Each structure stands twice: as structure tokens, then as C-alpha cells.
Image 1 (tube, rainbow, N blue to C red):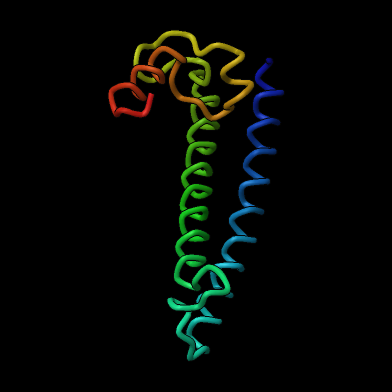
Image 2 (cartoon, rainbow, N blue to C red):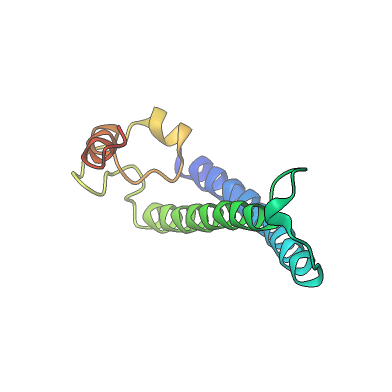
Length: 122
């Protein structure tokens, strides 16, 4: 993939992520507002999830989206520096298939795999 196509893909991912962050922020703010104005015992409500659970869930998704936005910004900076397809850990080439699947990837598949096994995730 040429640099222009990579930049377009990262830009599109960034725009979608910003839109997702905006929508989730509105959802999160709505949940917080609903909880502050309500005098309910949602912890014992047999009808479904609690407001606290919903707030935590949206908060976690929001944190993930913000982290991904940081990854995308880092990928754009790496692209500007001519390092987008170079592994941050071992300086090997990051495979085009990996970059196609994960445009903000910072490590090659070998380093990503060893990182997961080092943390017990892989």
C-alpha cells in the first residue's frame, strides 16, 4: 500500500474513531445525568443491568476508543517519519497483511505474539 493510501486509511479510521468518541461521550453524559436525577435502587432491579454497570461499560469503551485514537495519531506521526511499517521493538518490517488488518500496528507479528505470551494473553 502506498503512503497516500495508508494516510487515507489512517485518516478515515481517525474520523470514525472521533465520531465514536463523540457518540459515546453523549451516551456517558446521559447515563450520568440520569443517575444523578433519579432516586432509584438500581442495584436490586431485577429488570436488567444497573446504571453503574452501564456507566462502567460505556466508560471502558470510551477509554478504548481514546487509546485507539492515540494509536492512530502515533501511526500518522510514524508515517511522517517514514517508520510506519517498521517494528518499534525489533526494527523488522511489519507485514503488509498486518498493517491492512491493524493500520495503527506498531510491532511486527513476532513481537506482538511474544508480547501476548509474556503477559499471559497469547
